[in-house]
Amino acid sequence: MTRILTGLAAAAFLAVAATAQCNDFTSPGTLLGSGDDSLFAVQPLGFTFTMAGSAGTTTWTHFRATTNGVLMLTNAAGTLTSSPGSASYGSVTAAAAASLYGPAGSNPRIAPYWRDLNSSGAGNGVFFDNTTSAGVSCKVTWKNVVDFGFTAQKSFSAEIFANGNIVFSYAAGTNVTGSSPAFTGISCANGLAVPAASDFSPGPASSATGGMHQSFATGTFDIASQTITFVPNGAGWNQSVTCQVLPASHTSYGAGCYTLSDSAHQSFATSALASPALSNTAITFTPNAGSYQITAAGTFLPVGSVQAVPTIVANGDDTETVVPFTVGSFPGSTGLAICSNGFVSLATGNSTTFQQTAALLLNSPQTSFRSAHDYNPTEPGSGQIKYEESAGVTMVTWDGVYDFDGTTAADASTFQMQFYPNGTVVIAWGTMSTIGASGIGHFVGYSPAGPSTANEINFATQLPYQVATINAPAMSLAASPAPVSTAGSGTLVTYTQTNIPEAAPTSGVYLGTTIISLGQDLPGTSLALAGMPGCNLHVASLDLLIAFVGTSNSLTTQFQVPAGVSYGFQLYAQAAALVVPNSLPNGQNAFGATVSNGVASFISFF
Image 1 (cartoon, rainbow, N blue to C red):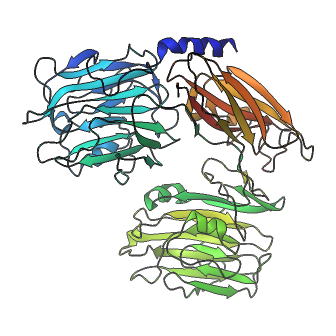
Image 2: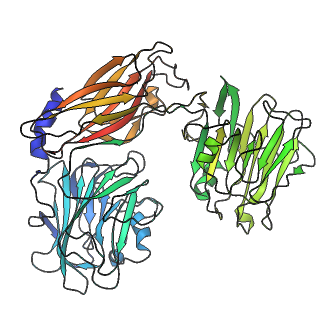
Image 3: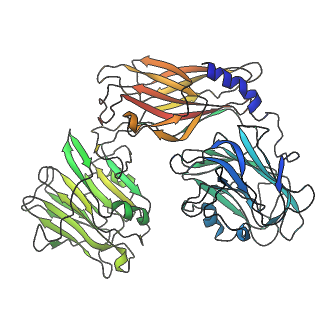
């Protein structure tokens, strides 16, 4: 508690003043330099920064700015991997989006106004300030700069906050002159796929991945005199038009454990991602405890090894063929319904659409096993779907089947499903195409008949995995009311824990603790080594623990935000519940605890 109180008292000296004017460029800080097409020396942020979407636990402590309205995050050495060369800092063309998102290994980019700029002249240039709000934020300002070859001045800034937020501010009159567009955006880079452009004003906008952007043609810059704020929402961002004075709020981030599902699946957005993960691997579904134990096991059986002359399944495009068992068998089925789009159902009735999705897998009316994708065995040159049957195993192989719109052998994928009389199923992959001509993703896994809770797993890292027999959401945490703090009053914040697991099966008792922290762990630290696989710690320190216990799976705790806490100070919270080790339906938690998502509380005077 002492650490929390000390932190709240210190906030007055660390936070941005609530009365600060919006879009103030009068005292921009230390001059980095000026000129044309310049990359400046490495500078410290003054804190460790986590960029939403950055891989794993990657953090950043320094930056390098350019004259052309973009900066790159780095660390003390100032190394920039695959950064745009000086000649292209302002070359905002159709390729600029790809440059913002960068190739694999590239550093995060923050671009409030990326264009070919010139900052020559007294009082003009690029400035930075990491002392006014030391440890809270670092601001980089481009003051009185012009589009190269023109005279209309503009000022703007990018402020990076230790809590993960990024704020862009623009002076009145900021606009685009000249024929090439200006480019505004943020990106964790590192090969991130380029998303569709956003519209920042009037906003709000959001992204599910670590970047978002907008380009502005001549005369169309509609965020002059405004401030836009980017707030992490996990791996992506929420954007809104704001000022530097924001209302008090609570924001959820991260995810709790465990979401229990009677299904198990993994999604791949593209064939380029699916191919290296699946090719020459196999997974086995073994009946266990009323569901399946999934293991990284199994062997691809040669085509013709079960039935000397395989039966060609007469699948057209987006069709299903039902093949009754003759000598083969599988529990609960009289035959297999084989869809051309990469899955086998235990009875007919599932959608055969080319637009395969995870939702189709999880909500189909019939039990299915899937390596679903938009395949077309009728494409010229494509291989066929082959069925083989014996008393010991029934096997379905997509033997070099092309993607829809595939034209060459490079579009072919080979995989098979093996069904055994004892209920075991093997999905084994040969070589999977990287091209993905159809543009549809891959959706791999198993789901019983009827709706299932979404609970995606990674077959490469989370096996063995016991599929649950029930559907239940993970423990979650929410907070209210908004944490307002003025000179004369504070706020009693209530934290609500829901979906708490029973401390012991059938006991009717629920217990745990709410963790209050001065620090955020945005990417999350895996607790697998502590015996809690699939759970992540989303706070940086355990500064205050508030116990809860009761006979309901929804319980509350409270924390008093005192009066006089400065604007912009943040607290972070996460809940943990205690259970008997290995007593959860998935049986994998040897430590005996689960955790919720995190909640970030932004303190303001209104």
